[in-house]
Picture 1 (cartoon, rainbow, N blue to C red):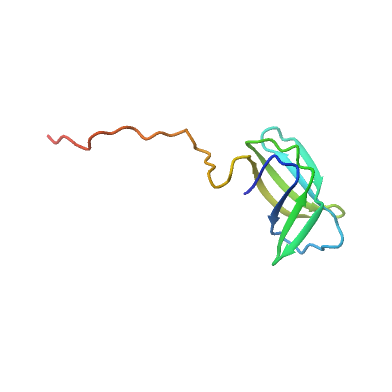
Picture 2 (picture 1 turned 135 degrees about the vertical axis):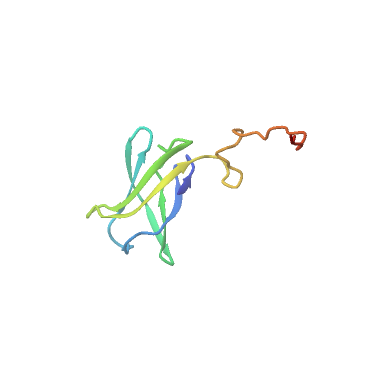
Length: 118
């Protein structure tokens, strides 16, 4: 799962299922909102390869809504061949302190561990 923010300009890593030519073929990013099923397509502005991990950068992701899940489909513009698919969660909270269960569970106050035998 990829975790993004609501910022318009973002870079994130992908590991494509086939070789990506860095010189040709624009890479399209298709985001599908899991709740509303709305599909938004954007073109990646740059992609950098480091040891078969591609860092994709896009500067027009301002449509992302906080606390929303998206399905990301990445494909070539000419052939339409899918090269990567993943799930995206959008949050503005720091990843190191984020908890989806924050405030949902409280530990009951138990004052003894005695049991009765008959």
